[in-house]
Image (tube, one colour):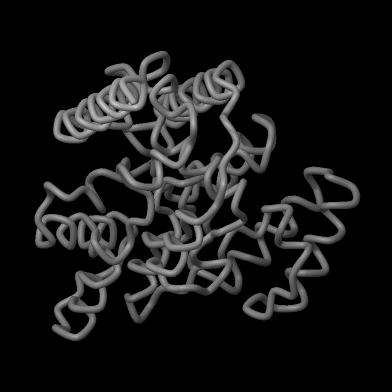
Length: 289
């Protein structure tokens, strides 16, 4: 029997929740969401069996690899896979997780790490996490636009951005070096506005095959997957929300680069130039008065 056990291994704000939902559209796949996230222990997790909850509590209290292995075995027995954000663990536990009994890994990351970090800071500040708050994306965005943000300390953001980029490189090298089977996918491939919906669905089908499952042919399920991957329905942060951060232009100027991405494209930068110009004109008009 083929090993169909897998882990969605990702970083925060990389689109892992939507990927989980898209994979769960497959009738044979059931995925546990972030069992090692500290918030897991702060809410009643009705979806997981009591056996897993009890083992997780034991692991949380002791943190030993033995109890860790017991949790992994219990998850494997009840689910085909689970989602894990590497920031929840140190390197030792993450490495053990990736190499335990040769699970298949879906390595999900974002090319534009700067947008990922800003998105994380926005969610952390407002406490608006679309799935956690169970609010529609447009409602979450409305609340965010009405929120009064403080400036983000650039050096702190720079440090977090560097750590994220280093971790991304490190874990990819770890998987490659240890010959652990993994499927690399990016946020941009799944949700990018320039990628057709058919190409996005094709990527999900490729993941099914990588995991050892049959491709989906049912039109209803395919439509469901398309809805989950629909960029317009899922994206909350954009030019409007970024501009709510007082020093966002300073952040773009100091941290935007080719390796970890920019916040604004050429069209947005043109819009910013017009905003700046209007501010200068208004200031001059006020001085004349």
